[in-house]
Length: 201
Image 1: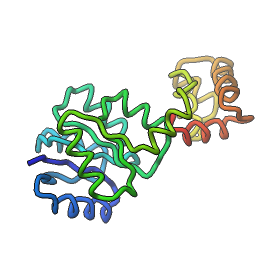
Image 2 (image 1 turned 180 degrees about the horizontal axis):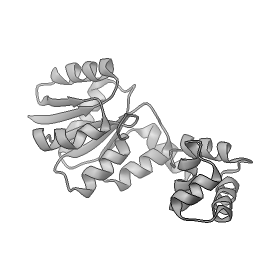
Image 3 (image 1 turned 45 degrees about the horizontal axis):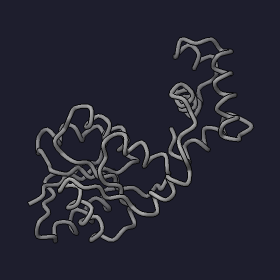
Image 4 (image 1 turned 180 degrees about the vertical axis):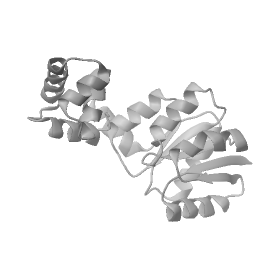
């Protein structure tokens, strides 16, 4: 029996997925959580074989949780279940040790097959998401550019970003200019949105 933890903030979807997976004779949903920051405690308490994580969750997003589980050398394999087909997400997930990446609109038998495959040591990648990631190429942004764009997305002004990151305002503006040029955008808001759409921040 493969034990599963489900993490998704949409209660109806989480319940439906749990019920459908529960119909599979070899799968057992042992825990459900609705927030990313509840996953680590649930993994510690229930020791699942596979953690199925949504990307967009309060507390911590699924990719951040996957990175934390990977850093903590958690025993469970991780499968990302998402409605967002952003190529940067797939690349980030792979570097975080995620073994499965399944679209939310996939049929339940596909998710069940993915869980079985990654539990057996394999990988399962949604074909369309994988193709999109390959076509998009690598993330052109540096870690610092991503960090500054993330803060820009919160509405932070240049002066606040500079203070928070211990940089000069001119340096922050230079990073933003470089990021905008790389993304082909004429302003910081457009650059943030473009990077977010690609899953690069």
